[in-house]
Length: 81
Image (tube, rainbow, N blue to C red):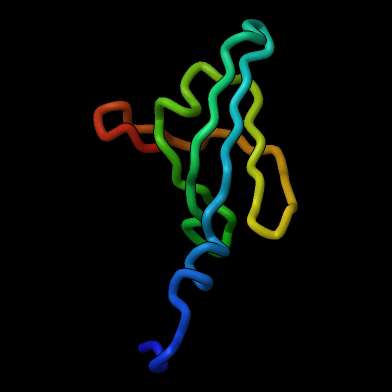
């Protein structure tokens, strides 16, 4: 339930992240994409093609913070990671 006049975009944008992926063995192979915070444990949902074959992941948050990340699971069929 949201109160009338609630700025849903401002609330939702706090969960949107930038995912940067690099392969240390192939430094020219970089990718990036958006994602969102899934739960209070800090799981991030993004596209599988963004993180495939990456050895280093960084997540950048709306508040300017950033952290390293690791892939927990992927579905190439659904292009979700």
